[in-house]
Length: 309
Ligand code: SF4
Ligand code: SF4
Image (cartoon, helix red, strand yellow):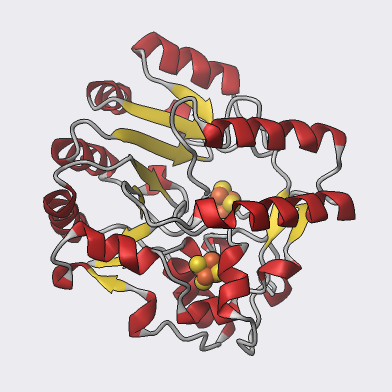
């Protein structure tokens, strides 16, 4: 799930333009692809500037109760995998020390994060160490209305904004909006209130690893927007963070090297994280970003390798 920018800023304006372009230019057309690649190229300099603040994401779980084709988190082929609360807390404490308890935003996502039995602890720990940071909870929404009152109270107390991905599935979105409103909890769709119903995108992997690092990185939509923290490590994108599931399920070895991840325990100051995120990673050779396929009709994953290659 892709993170969103907060507040009225250039990111919001670009997202609104994009959401409106989709209404005119079909996502599965060549024109949409050209426009997107040109836009990404033009924005590369800005998107990949050295950070001065971070949007950090954690996966509460890596599996999911939906099974979407081309899922960029590899959830349909992930084994059950829950965030370990002790390890998470250790990482949050370290990140808080490094950043002076201040991030641009913190995202709790998945997979489907509502499958985590201790999801409320995930919220409270994040809020304890990042009291002023925008805290987002990204869900497919299927389980939301089954959550007990303590869930809604905890969201309210910790000022957690709920973001629902707009898949073409049957959920009671009006009921969800009413519930969030009754608790005074902020609600939005992932991608903004005017985001169209989701079509899927495929970011093909190059199994031979023949892509130019720079070219992949320059038109990468995930860098600096899908930074992921798990098990004591910072990953620059959710592709590297989730590739273990692809490798295991399809018996491949798209190698994640020591230079693709940052060991939190070795980081002495936040600038080391910003420097790490500023450069292409060896793993970018596996990302055929130019081959991106937009506008794939939403359907269930058949768990075939072609969904990711
Ligand atoms: S809802 Fe679909 S796209 Fe989102 S994590 Fe689950 S399987 Fe993946
Ligand atoms: S490996 Fe590189 S190109 Fe691929 S998603 Fe991550 S940062 Fe982007």
